[in-house]
Image (cartoon, rainbow, N blue to C red; front, side, top):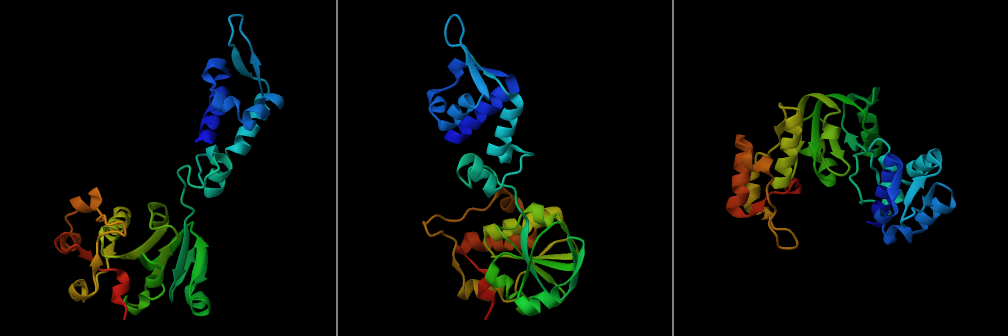
Length: 269
């Protein structure tokens, strides 16, 4: 929080050219960063006859460079863990832009980041392939929520699909970079899984939810409580609550009625 306050101070003086001394709190003045600005000749204090005075920019070009180096996340509003820790001393201090890292596997040839890629070769040799996604063109794509299920997905989903597991969870930034004739979502059958399915569907309306044929049996024999480890029940998003699609209504009702849901791992033997 302290670094955020200091950032706002530097941002304000850069925008306005000066700041009244009375607006600069002691918490800022006591920092080593503020001392650097004074001793380094970035800013200066000019007192007024009545006392107080103002802080003025002394070397604008140097101050702009200092600000850009110290707060790289302000450059184009791109937030990363590296930028956050350098500017806020905390990787999670600001909103972070997805870096679009995916795991991808399958038996097909796809156009990945503009390069024709034979996934069969990499899947056979290494089990999976990884990339920072810029673009993907494939015939059939299946987004798989959990890593262990991603590595086994072809056991329960018909051939021809390219399987994707996204680092950090499914997001529109990854989905929107994907082009396919057919898109499937294979999630946990809980409120979060339904939300992820509808997120993908909001980008590609022809998206389908994969539901195993023995879903009802799994719900009775292998389901788990919807409550978290802290004892709180998982709550559906507004998108899930308002959805009228038959399959979503069915699974949503099952969760409310039984207090349980089917994890996708339960599908595998």
